[in-house]
Image 1: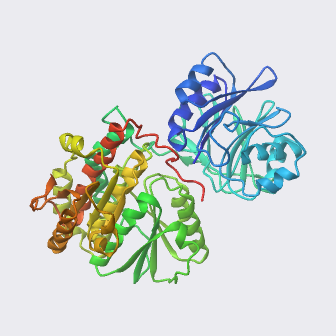
Image 2: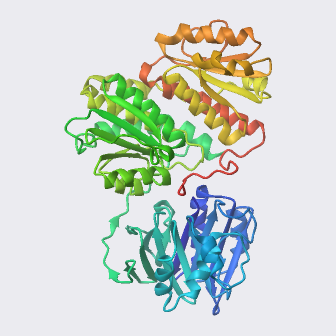
Image 3: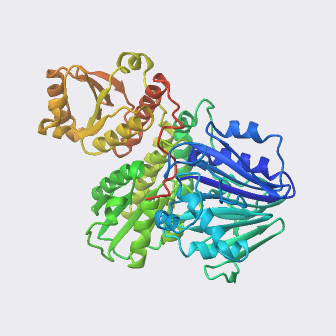
Length: 573
């Protein structure tokens, strides 16, 4: 979750590190900080405000060596003492860390030193200091005693060492030296190629040289990767990332369709000769797109199920060589999803990643990749990436059924006619006071209800519930009264009348009903949708509901880009 960066350059590394942290801030914004080496000692500057505050604190400071961190808190509260970078007890070593040291309590008991924070990361920096040898030897030796995950950057005197296990880390030469970062989009300067650190690999970084080491301390050679065009940013609105990204949906859907129609992405996939079943595995918003994908595959005659990654890994699901396992993740860094993929890779199953991030961990674990081309998504609450996930899963379902060519005209018409629809502001003024909100729907509309409810919870902190409309009378209807707002999604023709019957039951008990639909209102207050291809209506219907969450958030005075307790990339289990 946290973001780390490190620079050793001929110019001011502090300024470069701050610029990188601004890009990495989406990974965690509880606190941020920088350590630098100057005049023979380490200086550390931290902030509990934001990157701009850190920038002001460091604008008069210069050094050729700096490490930086933007934090999503795991161990210890949001305090300056718990903020990174962390120093060893002698103040001679500084460290930034993304990940979790699972055995930190045991390690801490065996370290005879004073601790300033509640973090597992401070234990790690002191463990490194207690080891013998050069800095790279200390880091590698300490890593062997560590259980858990880490991407770290460590400085001692004028030395910079980085290493990783499971958490992402990349290194590269930039115009004036070397850089390491959690995300290739944070490379600042003229970076043309980069190196991917694999698990339990380490590197010594100097201005004009990078040396790589394995877990045994042996030097290894690594091949550079060509840096892809840093994921396109189609930003068209400056108020918040979330609003911009919702409005970019039309652009990225057209871009995604163009990429799939003008390339061999689908025909180059190495798939099982006979797919009897498709299992989709994901977390959060990506899980909702996986649920939608399962419905698409079933409509094409392929048995399909969606699973929550954190449950699948520990369940008793029966694996099969005739099953295609699709792992869905916007970042490609989701720890639970990656853990499932690695487990199935060991069992030699057929794996496919559906991600929005080139060169991500999940792509490297899986046999095949379906990219979404949504462009960089900075807002914690996923919007355009979710729509692209649903869209690509639909394209893939048509491809597997050999129906893609027959639907190209309809797909082009959809992307041309699709409109980004805001939520009615006058209606919002009438309903924003509700604190008991249910989202209901049937079939794919129920999945949309799940995603809409999650969006509202993520950024407005309203404890909403999503429920299949047919299940209301099996318990949840007991909660409905005059203080209840029901937002119903109706785009499925075959269950329309059933849904309207459910809504009459709600109205009879005093609940306020808002209908989001492309059908007639049935006497309910309605948010009207354009009628398009029924299988793609979930993309049409989620847009005003994403805006509903955003406008509620703004109305309540919150920042949608920085929801409390959440971060964009969930790199810990």
